[in-house]
Length: 350
Image (tube, rainbow, N blue to C red; front, side):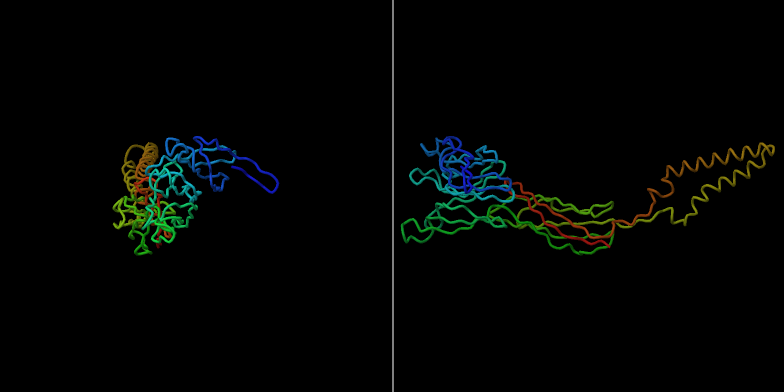
């Protein structure tokens, strides 16, 4: 493997032809400058001896090679002769052809995730209903569909009894997540809205999908969301419910603010009347001052314990703040290698 400009070449990595692979045909480059590719030989030499079944590899910007996967034939195929394609999640996709003279299972299309797990997406059956021997690299569209060609198989046998090749499309296993608009889409504080969440299978997916939801922005007393059931399978809808908080009024304010006045001053008035008839004038003044201070301290203590006359228990609340909110629903599969999906709906609170 090399790097070249108009004047010179730099060898980035030289294959030893052993466990690191041999005979690479093509590479791709990611945004960080790492190179990915396949070799048609090397790797596991107990597979397809004496050549080996090939590997998938990565060469980083320093020239270090890492074997990402070693083909061992059987169900996963062998002898990848085409390059790879990479999606935005770092998954790699490619094909195997197998050696015609030493067949080791059917040709395949595969996916390799960033954790190194290999998944067979399709086994090519060849003539007369399917293609075989995909020598060219796959291409990938924004929806995750893969496209390629085979040089053998198909329904036409114009040049041989095995067919003249195909153009194919593969839809990797997965699911699509969607949600209807919230009904109603505009609500008053203290009311709720609902939407239907649907899971649609893609590429033969048949697993279950677990749901989570969140609301942004998330102020104090903001809308809360829930999904029932918490998980479902394709074709079985779930219900998204978004609840809001109604306004509340202070119990103390229902007395027009006169309650604290009477609570403090009625005991004081009674105290003045009682103490005024006791003892001398000088003693009476001292007793009144002491009693007044004691009553004020006791009333202050009572109000502090009760929340200061309306700071917590009875304070007025406007409920959920008015505004527009975005509700995000995320679906996660219980099957390995399936990318989580997300959908969003909006809600206006007035």
